[in-house]
Amino acid sequence: MDIEYRPFKTKQELYAFICDQLKLIADETNDITAILANVSALFMLEMQEVNWAGFYLYKSDKLILGPFQGKPAVAEIAIGDGVCGTAAQTLKTQLVEDVHNCCNHIACDMATSSEIVVPLLLSDGSLFGVIDIDSPLLSRFDDEDRIGLERAAKIISRIMEQI
Ligand code: SME
Image (cartoon, rainbow, N blue to C red; front, side):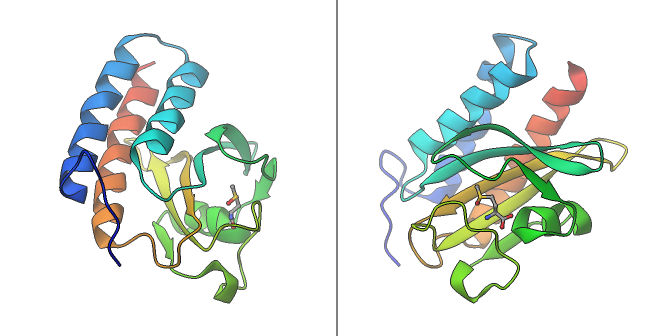
């Protein structure tokens, strides 16, 4: 699939830019909501063919909707439910090429066809939350996105524990 990543030539360039921006966003405030709101806007602005980008945060043994861009979404997800709950349970990135063939997918926007969910892990290995990014294209996300977003997730997790 040929997706343009202008002004970026490659996904590596895109994620290098995103990771640099994360540090600038965090320098502005110590408020978790403000930082994650700006990060979700950054994902939405810079990633092509994305219809939802944001966070679910781990609280009281479930995932609670955090800052995001896109259509209103399910507010609470049990650990193990949906793609987000699976990422939270396994602590592993979930890359779903076709959500319609994924029985464990919670539909929030009928336009979504593919999805990537990356856990945010603190230094002690515990779960802070997940990044969830959805696309209207099938197979929008690949291993390069996984590597780039896992790098971003590490930076976001470090920022969260320094607050
Ligand atoms: N699709 C997710 C639910 C959240 S929405 O995509 C924003 C899931 O299956 O966990």
